[in-house]
Length: 295
Length: 314
Image 1 (spheres, one colour):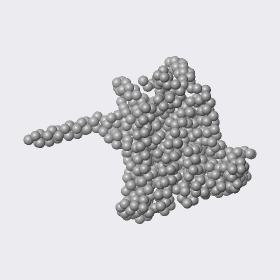
Image 2 (cartoon, each protein chain N blue to C red):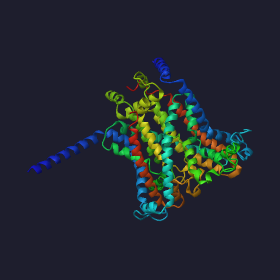
Image 3 (tube, chains in turn blue, green):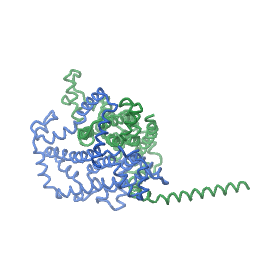
Image 4 (cartoon, rainbow over the protein chains, first blue to last red):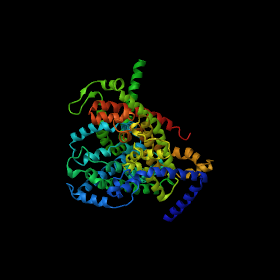
């Protein structure tokens, strides 16, 4: 069975390559990608180089992009500083795992669960609910922060993980994204499962979700970035609840003396979501959901 | 007599409709169950705050005292007295009209080109192009390039080539601010829309390309227009909404490169103006009024764009 699938993939891969592609077009695209790629890679190149620069190079004037005498000093400085934080550093990490994980997994599951009926069922109120979601994305987040803070205080969940996780679960973007992808699934797919006696939850979990894997992996990337960048801001007062991001900013905020550690912090803050991004993206690109499935 | 007959018939119809509606609601129990967790949270943390903010826009509210109702005063002040708002509205419209469509096309174009590559190379390319959105130091790069002395990269190159005689303070010169903001914003455009297009291209049925080739589609451009784009209309809609929300809300790029306030407000946008009132002057009522105007602007353009998108592939 597996072999058959493999052979079919190989086959379709070959066919796909040959269709409607000219040499001149390919060359043009390669050149274009090369030029633009260099410009887009700049921030990445700079983060890496700065993290490896010794202090004198960090303060060199005029500044250079590339490092001349790479060193790992910045990282060892950072690790020393990590050891005398108020709360043990592992506590910040745990907080980040809970907040980022909760906000990401919670949003992906809850939003997907709501997106399925909105995309594939017919029920009164469906259109207006979706319209609300679409409109909500266009209201400036700056001014809704204050009322949101009030609501969170009224609920009494201020100064807890919930104050960050629950609002994150209610973002409009995830539902919108998931609904758009689910709309593309052929109805026949769910119909046949229904004939087999599967309930709606089961259809959602074992048929719809696997078939929109690229969508929820992409949503996970967005949500991870969003939650990872959260410093806890106004909601978390207790030092024991604050996330890694906050602790790292505190360390690097020490002015010139900590510029080296600061460069290492910038690197770590970028490296974590990039790692997550690469894991998710390579999975997005591997799923060959559609071929043979849509009729 | 005929009149009463009509009326009772009408009543019967209404009753039938109500019965049908009730029946439909009861039948859809599973659907409501599934949407409940999301929409309960959505109501409390998204809808309610928006409704409250719109409410605040009719008040004077400094976040210390209770808000006092002032009617349309904030809106009237915005359009009749606030010159900076008018300037920022103009800047925002220029930025949105230029960067919006171009960014959207770039997202689509690059997602589509990357889709031509395979395996690890493709994941790597996606990372490179998404890097400005994920690295968090994007503005640092541009500050290096646009620094106003002769060590700024752009000045350095232009001086060496003899195009300039002396260094130009790019971000302190009114006429250069907006063009550079546009360039940087375009460079930053491969974000949410881009990734959702990458994912969307994955779900296009491969057999459709074979069928199209048999039907006489000759090159990749035709294939794009007649096969790929129509197949990913849902993603195109999503991308358009995301593009609108980001293009009209341009602010970070201006704050980081041109500063706030920027020289002669050349880089002021609706959102920098909003941030000024909302986070610096703490006039929440006025800031909410700005947000409401911005919201209406986005809703209007969304209507227009969605209409255009329906024509894709025709």
